[in-house]
Image 1 (spheres, one colour):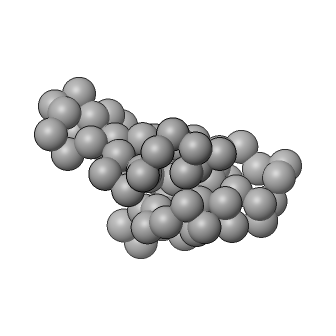
Image 2 (cartoon, rainbow, N blue to C red):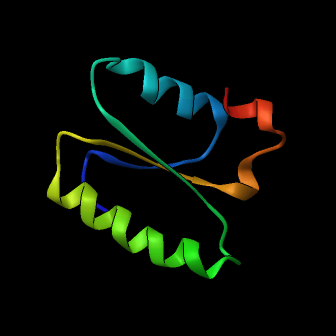
Image 3 (cartoon, rainbow, N blue to C red):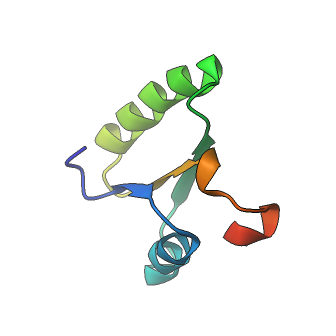
Length: 73
């Protein structure tokens, strides 16, 4: 995805860094899993929202990246 407001998160550090850059910006965080059909459908909606609202920070977090619930706090 070429939108500068859409980010596929690769690590907890990247997640924290992007959220911290602009604390006044509205963020949409999509936690998803590739094996879950509802997630696949929701990913399409999230991409459309990113295109429609360029001021929105969109973070796409693959569930498999989470070592524990505490990783992304």
